[in-house]
Amino acid sequence: MIRIKTKESASWIIGAVAGCIMLVVTLLLHSAWWVAVVASLLTFVLISVLALGLMKGYVAYKLKPIYSVVLSRDVHTGEILGELKDKRVENLSEELNAWADDNDKEISRLKEAEKFRKQYLGNVAHELKTPIFNIQGYISTLLDGGLEDELVNRKYLERAEKSVDRLINIIHDLDTISRLESDMTEMKPESFDIVSLAKEIADEAEIEAKKRNITITVRDAHNLPSRFWVSADKFYIGQVFENLIINSIRYGKEGGTTKIGFRDMLDKVLIEVEDDGIGMAKTDTPHVFERFYRTDRGRSREQGGTGLGLAIVKHIIEAHGEHVSVRSELGKGSTFTFTLKKVEL
Image (cartoon, rainbow, N blue to C red):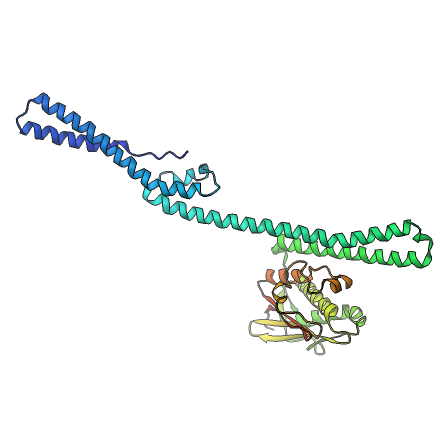
């Protein structure tokens, strides 16, 4: 319980003053000295008790809304004893309301974090479940006699290998995004040619692109070094290009083109990765950077996507203090853009 110390001495002072006044008045009226003393004492006691009662009533009136604030929330009153110490009653209600509002905001934040954690764990379990069950099914089939059939055993082993690769990709992406979330200080900025890096990653993705007869073009790559130099973590920006280019190949039009372009934005460089593929609906664009969000779940899993690539892109770009966005239209493709700090040559 909170104990509010009222200054009882104030009531005694008021009573003493009243008693003295009564003593003077009775003496002036030529009353006997003992009558004056008795009247003074009675006045002292009555006024002191009355003053103390009024003070306590005033304090209770002031504290009533304060207790309402405290008791309306699931908190322990002991948590705020230190804050109430030596405070004036007049200020307590205002301060407690401010404290309670901050407490409510923190509770809401923690509830959102808990909701996100549960959703995240559910998504992880769901994503891991499919390849694990596939591997279990393939192995069971092989053990039940398929191992002796040369046509079946190779096919099922290849499918099991594909599921294992998907598991490895999911775990790798989970590790990357967890590392980025836990320690954003891992970024090690350096100056480098962003066009040269894009060309390097595009060349590495060429084998994957040829499977769908997709051409990757990088603007200004024919004239290296380019005029587009940036300050950023080269390794992680390489991951951004890798994820965006692979994403454009998976969802691009077969026989289409992935274009990587650059725009001078004074103190920044704007990078665009554009495809002419299936695109996405407007309702999907606000969610594409969320973990495990897919506009086409069946196709994404078939292509080996983990649903974490764009979330990783967002974390890396935001860790650089920059912004990534997407514009898209169904049947016409998508364009992902992000900015990086420009370096003057």
